[in-house]
Image (tube, rainbow, N blue to C red):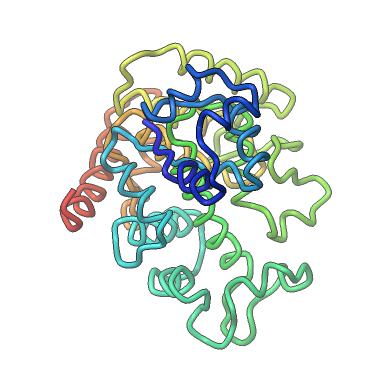
Amino acid sequence: MYDYTGLNNRLQEKGVKKSQLAAELHISSRTIAKISKGEKLSNLVIAKISNYLQCKPSELYRVISGNPILQRLREEKEHRIAGGIYHELQIRMTYNSNHIEGSQLSEDQTRRIFETNTIGSEEKADGVVDSADSSVGVVGNTGIKVDDIVETVNHFRAIDYCIDVAEEPLSEDMIKHLHLLLKRGTSDELLPWFSVGDYKLRANVVGGLQTCDPKKVHEEISKLLAEYLSKTDLQLEDIVDFHYRFERIHPFQDGNGRVGRLIAFKECLKNNIVPFIIEDRKKYYYYRGLKEYGNERGFLVETCYDGQDTFRALLKLFGL
């Protein structure tokens, strides 16, 4: 369902009636009626109206989700509400997902970056993003790698993106955009053979296992998406299976684990399934689950069930 309060307020401010809007933009009365019914307007119609009213499309409407978790996250994100589930999710999911991949930032430092845009000293968290030279070193005398800070800020933005597009079908463009959001501004971006926001150019190995040949990544991801999107009534096990197969393909030079977990988060929200947070202290079970999945799926599935319990604790804390 769609809430067009923003559009109605804009029309009222400018003294324009809906009938006048329809006449001037050549929009049918049937389309105008969708506004009152809370139905989706096409992107073309939204673009026409936003140009006419001289505002951004996002200022005209907001999506009201039938998923109470997603709706609460969107409301708190939109209104910048501190101390709610959106706030805690950003910190806990970002800390754990980055720490699994080797980030040295503590959960307290991650919290400080989200809440104050600093890392607990005089250094600003976003100040390092603009400096290409510093992205290969550390911040001041803290011993903290600049990339760890950049990727923390980037992960916050990637979670926002997942919340924004949660109900849209998963696509290659979406997957690549998540990688772009995660790795933009890092030292990896300076490497000529590292494609930020695109598939890997060099072969890589994970956990001693060979991954997909770079030349075949597009083909394999396309196959995986086609099979996944053909399913109906998705369950957590389907999302876990996609996650395993995505990680085996390992489409990017780096960042595959975090992108894969972000995809799983988005898909859980889309399918009204409680998301899961893999805690860093349980990463051994997560890695075992990925390694043994071909022989025993239960290890990874049970680890993700445990991650759901972690998320449910957040839901209980905030009365959801």
